[in-house]
Amino acid sequence: MKNIKMITFDLDDTLWDNMPTITKAEFETRKWIEDQVGKVEWGDFNGFIKIREELIKNDPSVQWDISKLRKEIFRIKLLHIEPESYRNRIVENAFDLFMLKRHEIELFDDVEMVIKGLSKKYTLGVLTNGNADIYKFDIGKYFHFSISSLEAKNSKPHRAHFDEAIKQVDNVSFENILHIGDHQVHDILGAHNLGIDTLWFNNNDSEWDQAFLKPDEFNAWKDLPEIIKNKYD
Ligand SMILES: [Mg+2]
Image (cartoon, rainbow, N blue to C red; front, side, top):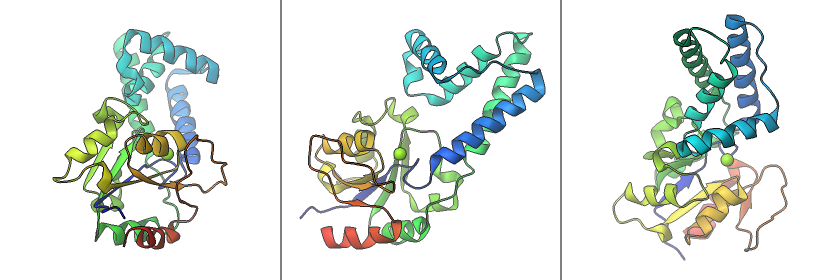
């Protein structure tokens, strides 16, 4: 049995349901921008992918600095707004509003209670590809560290987040970590590749799609303490 000392958690879609939050944040930010400057052609998802590819060609950091990506996309959509200083001010204020709204999340049931309990026994950390800041929430006090793609300068499933995690605490290696997340590739494959134990948060009945053995899964946070206890105590 492994000697687990540290548990790392993904954020979006693991601690909360991200889609409603992001959709609302996006909608309200666009509305605010249009209230300032009039109608904007936002384009569709394919257009977004194309712009993203172009931006990455000029500045590869946009791949992991999603805040920069978002600002640059606003800037491109507002290119017709003059002068540039005014455009930049709109971009910055719109981004601030987006970030405010992006943090209007609702934790899944029992998350707070379970995290609090686990923090008494394990060092807890956050490994996120997103730009939500756990320390903006009350629950942040239970986490010893938080690493986003901005700090890791890469995105899961790349190993950078996990490499950073073991630097946070003395005498912890990959075999002492349990990583918990919703994403089969970003979270589970990424950790699995390094020999890190995983638990899969699967609250929407997804089929296991990877070429390695499915880890234990759970669909309700209240079950998590018991799963961890049975596996590692
Ligand atoms: Mg996730």
